[in-house]
Figure (cartoon, rainbow, N blue to C red):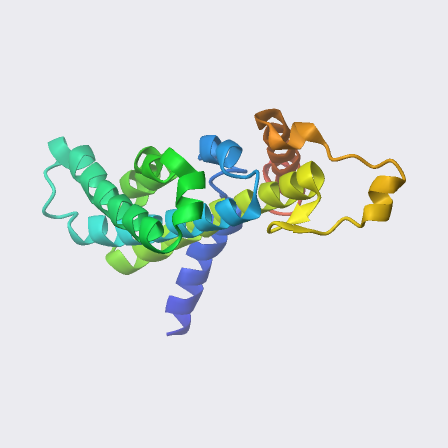
Length: 211
């Protein structure tokens, strides 16, 4: 039991931090630019991608001995697309306004490098339980960066936190202005770059591995 817990902990640490899909592998950047103007849309996107990553890993791993190698990509995309369609329908049914804000980006989870990459690199070679944990771990790693980017973009770009104004009016009266660049794609690039630098400078980062 203890060995199982240590094993799953290692998978989680690797996906969330040590080999973070955004900060270490530089994957999933497109959605990190597109859906991080508001924390609400970033949160929903994070949950959607994490669940799709986890369950796609579980299903593909369960079918790995039945999938012919010459059509494995087609099967993987079919599984991922089916999960994304279900996710999109649930969002439209229960979170319609946010679903409209996310627009096509939920559908583009199908082509997200993180999802397909974990299916190819991990799910096809490991058991279903490990593959599910690996998918969730990489989804949480993606979510951590996405939410951090959204926090700074929404706070500095509009003075809000989950749509609630948090910067007092007297601060604006003193001359403070929202940073318009933060609601544009370059603002996301700047923040992602700083987060990648910070992550890889901390213990366990690339710069430490090279020493």
